Length: 167
Image (cartoon, rainbow, N blue to C red; front, side):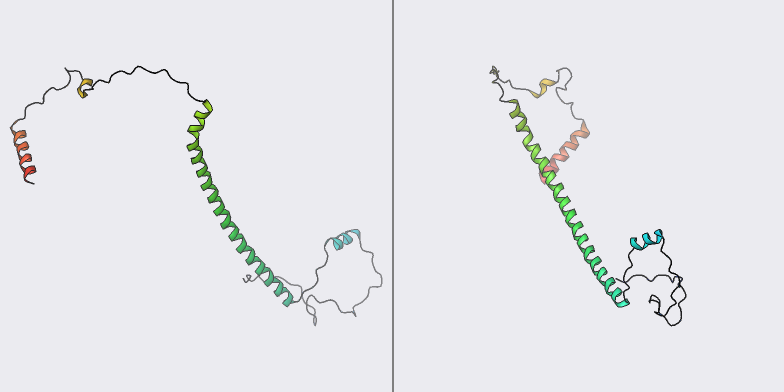
């Protein structure tokens, strides 16, 4: 996976004949008086150790290694997310199954907690009487006999009967 190119930043002017990042030549001037470093300079020096200078090839190899590690971590993360979703679905399914089983088991357990019902006294059975469907409507309200058909209704009834019998 290639990284996007960075915008050109302002760099320090390079001295002639030397590559940037290279140590100074051994023939540089040695100061006559060596100054004692201050306390703040000591803290900075001890807090941030200097990283060794790496060549471009070493840096490229390190970048490739980190990119490979990143790809494997992304794949593992994707797989872990998939497994988490599957597990969540399974948990929901099991919870639904549990609630159904609890509902099925609830009625017997409620009666079991109450204990056995005491024996109810035997009722005297009455003989059943025949129920007439017209008993619910008082005789003065219900139509006892249908109204006689007029001529038009009679002809319609006759036509229906003829056509139904012929088919």
